[in-house]
Image (cartoon, rainbow, N blue to C red; front, side, top):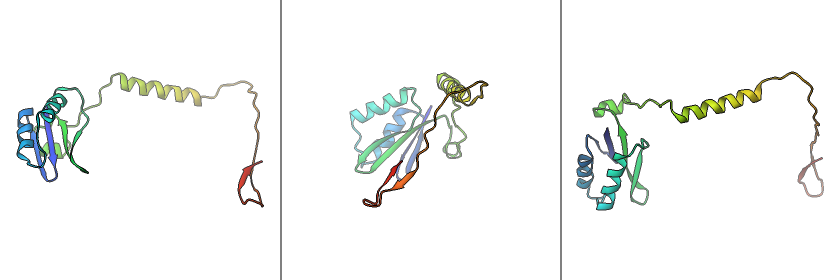
Length: 132
């Protein structure tokens, strides 16, 4: 797993966490410390694939993205997109889709119901509207 790091126009596709930390240490504005280094190592070791951003100062961030791209060109052309696993998330979507289709199915039979039609009427004294 490679890490893509970007801070303004400085970017790197790092093959290891140490390479990424060296890159961030070379940027003076970021102010690399032990806490940030530990957090980056935890992110790289985790199963999370969402991009992570770190605040440098007000409204200024650098980002880290996990990728399987071997080169920067592959990453830029999005050749290393991760396929969505057919795990529990996909099953939940399927269950939700079947619930929606069950609601739209027509079933023969008699249905009892009551409709109460109202219309919006303006009250002349206040100029406001209400249902009647």
